[in-house]
Image (cartoon, rainbow, N blue to C red; front, side):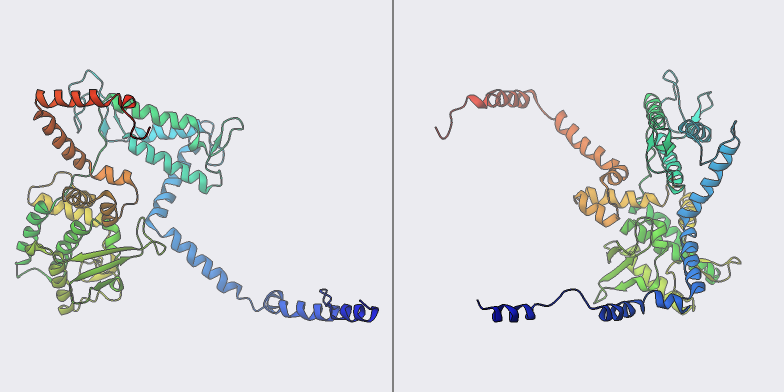
Length: 437
């Protein structure tokens, strides 16, 4: 290759380093959407502060946040009364145990001794056996304390050697919970579960509500409450939703399926529901024509339209205002639902400790006995763990054990001897002749 060709080739090669003039121009362009805006004072600092305050206020307004704040105050007040005085910042695992023992005295479960006749029986009896929190409540309490320390920047774990971290996560606190469980196991304290509410009992108090609606002298607001309740409880029983989640249903989140075949709810706010994982509920017309949830939903919406009780935009199920003379803009809360359910069941003499969660249990058990899989039941009701399904469908296990017990009782000696003979022949399968030698 000649020197001339080499020189021309070098000229074609571009220098990757930009010239000082180009670099200055590039820096000026990049600063127009960054530091230059701050220098010119174009940032709306008041608007930013207002927005941050708005979001903080929204977080603090949730039911969970209010409960946590209240619990944090009580927890801090207790530590300040200790000798020497403590705070959330310097409390230890032993302080956590002392607080839990203090709360334990305010329980409702009687822990009977092994020799007492009331052992294993639910309820309160006139004996000197102590009344405690259930092991599940103690576990939940420790979890709440652990969350407070985590929010206080004390982490999620406890280091015993250094004596730092989250005191509620310390091994000594975990052993305390194990001891409580062991004590209650000896006393035959069974975990408290929601009493299932099935459609038969729901139909009885729905007829009671229908009878009250037939009174022509009741006010529009009283009639609204009765119609709202009969729709709400029937929807709960068919969907298995949480009362608080269904109470937060907005008018734009409920739509008719084409052809008026049913409705679809799209819940985006709830205890375990948010915009990242909305809960979609499909509901069709029921074979139980007397209290088909969709038919009575139509009646409810028609009544509100005729009486000019505006539901849109806003919550589909609402509370009344303070004077009970008009609808408020507030949702139908789970505590109000619980009070109304208890009132109706007591009115017909059928109250057995049911709560709004009873409809979830009844719905799940009905689906289980109809033969649906666990995954489908969890999807329908809105559970994400097998533990929740097992907690609410304990009756399903008893039903399955009933079937197996019946089969064992009908098993004759000739059948069991044949099973033993077959097992005896097959257990030494390694000595059988090979198919491929």
